[in-house]
Length: 143
Image 1 (cartoon, rainbow, N blue to C red):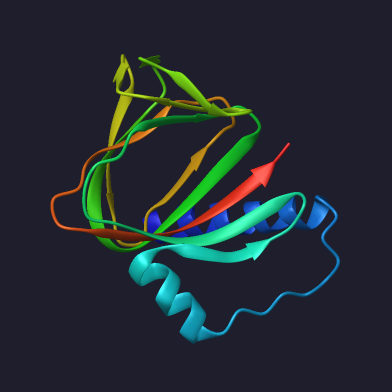
Image 2: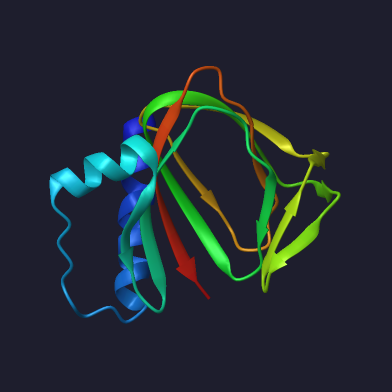
């Protein structure tokens, strides 16, 4: 069941990305993908989307992206991830991007290998706990 949900989410994201107007095929070799997942890094950058590999070994700050929907796909590790609620201590770091210190009233999720998380633009989100490490793909879709 979890696999079907993940597959459905990825296919929906692919349809959404295709509808966003991307017509050029982009290939990223496995060496670059492996490096991005090991230490973080950009894989694809376009006017309407970006794809990157991310790796965390500790919690992060609360984030809100006003015009970007994030799609995460976890490939290794686990984390406690909080979404929604109200950001505490939010400050603008650049246009459309806010960072805070906590979330009040959000929903807690346990992320592990194979999970997909879609965070709509404007939604506070936070890697609250990372027991060892977590590696994941991030697709950012601009609206």
